[in-house]
Image 1 (cartoon, one colour):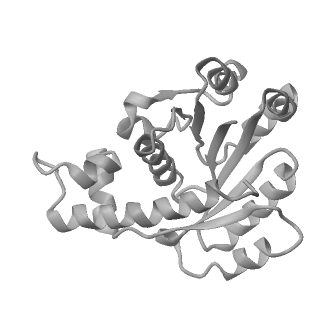
Image 2 (tube, helix red, strand yellow):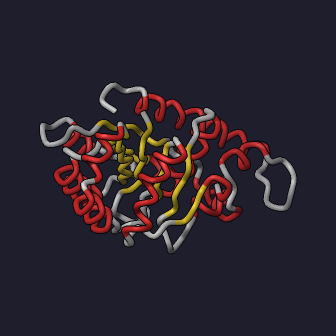
Image 3 (cartoon, helix red, strand yellow):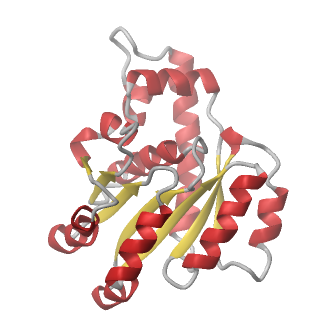
Length: 230
């Protein structure tokens, strides 16, 4: 079964682009065929770091969004979409006007949302609204970004309630200065962990931190993707 991976969170600055790049590196390292689609017109972080496996799309245009399903079917790959903040209204319109969930069921394509949250109440409120709207259309993994907060007790309380079917993982925190250096250099995570030469390469301890972080993050992704509820 092929999957469409929507990486979102509606709130800006919660780490959606980090997770999109992490998933891209995970797919590459595990030889999982995929194509990334960068819907963030403002930042295009996924395109800068993983340009060889990523294309740009315009989500608020049906013809642009249609590429998601067409690519899965024609290329026989998973598709990863890096959604910008405040894009759910376009996603909602495209899915409802075109019966996307029903079509994917016919085509044996799984729709999976990776919903990234910080520990703020506004992020929780948006998660609740998303869960209410999409719980019957796609599966959801809530990603608690430990780089954007430490107290997720209110998120956990919601996840254990009867109001959602979502599962969850924790995205470990990478040292802030190291992450900034990766982003300023537009490195892939492989490049950050392995490139030893050049003007912007990371130092030996920075590369080691990235390797340890990737190992922990991959374990979290494995637990989500291997779960029977996903």
